[in-house]
Length: 279
Image 1 (cartoon, one colour):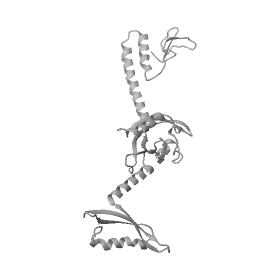
Image 2 (cartoon, one colour):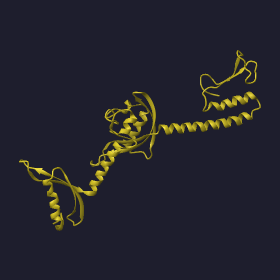
Image 3 (tube, one colour):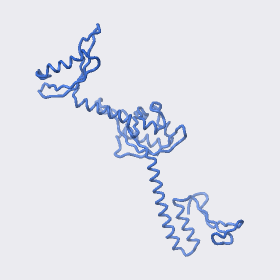
Image 4 (cartoon, helix red, strand yellow):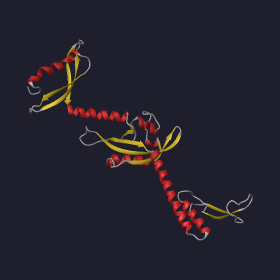
């Protein structure tokens, strides 16, 4: 009368009781009534219950509102996809900052197996940069996730030796949906290895800086009347981006370029300080 419309009652009962004759679990969806007369779509999972004699004695039925169950299934499916097929690293870290779940991408990036990495302190995996990484995780546990991804340069300890990588990382604070007050379960850490892109960017920046330095050096040297001043000015510009130390030698008799003969003595005319880089 109130749970099922009378016109639907026979069909609903028949589909539920059909579980008596079928092994396994049966899934159905029914449009039911609430006591206030409104409609609700529920998804049921029913299975037969066997008696002491091994024969079907009844039906066990569990049900929930369809949209709530779909949301749960969607969340579970998303978690499974991230932890299996994602093209970036996913690591679930507990409140002690130890990995509890690692997907395939992350296990390759960290240099270990998906099970061997679990429960190990990050300091055992990361030689340099672990302090910054753990500080970011602690901040997420205390304050919540930052608004933008962060980049961390780390040095990893692997069987082949140490290797330096750059990870662009995002973080999510995980809290239990079942607690009355939010209880932190840990942090979801998502990252991609962007080392190649960062190295290429650094090299491009270095080349642009060197080209600018050379252009300024030529302009400065061209304004010098004294040749020695022009040369030292040129070399001062070369120190930035090209070298830590510069030496300038001339032959004792001062021949022009290309005329130095074997055995002729070179004289140190200018040099940067030997103890530290400088002009």
